[in-house]
Amino acid sequence: MMLTLFACGIAAIYGHPIMTGLAFGLVLIAAAYSIGNVSGCHINPAVSISLTVAGKMEVKECVKYVIAQIIGAFAGTLLLWACIGKNYGFGANVVNSSFNDITIWTGLLVEVILTFIFTLVVLGVTDKKENGHVTGIVIGLALVLVHFFGIPFTGTSVNPARSIAPAVIQGGEALKQLWIFIVAPSVGAIISGLFYSLVLKEDTTKKKSK
Image 1: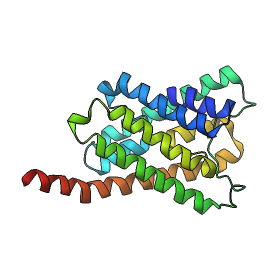
Image 2: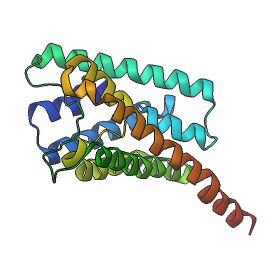
Image 3: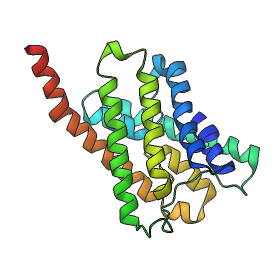
Image 4: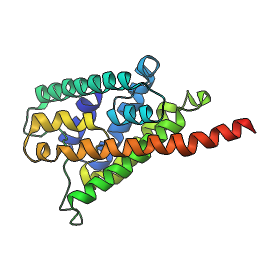
């Protein structure tokens, strides 16, 4: 709810890439240090999927988290609608074909790569208990980073819930392209989960045994 209300709200009202990127990162940092001890503060189906693939979360629990995340995203978008109306939009994701003549496939690739990087950061930084005091900051800054790169291409999703609610309520082209922002982040999350469990986790185990 916080993410779609404040971060998508800033994207809709101001449309400034730096402000938008910082907004997403700052909201995530605030959420991490307020609800992280309760739920882990995924607030993103891609994060939950990645953790599940990496063996850090049960499938049933992942499904519950994803449902809750989508409900929260709709709650935030509806609150944003109540605050600013529909004229500004809701910060929905669409592939920006006017930027360097990119295609739908380029947008898909960008979202897969950025989601892979972001969720891999989440997997890595949460792997060590000693990182607990900086986890929220590291993950928040990683989200800022991927937004700075991805905004010109797709507005940056890396989060299906953040894309679903604004697209459904806004309609139009955002709704037509919604599949991109469900498929690409999910694929990126699956790849990062597999990469972590097959490569990084194995390396960590070897180091501990030594």
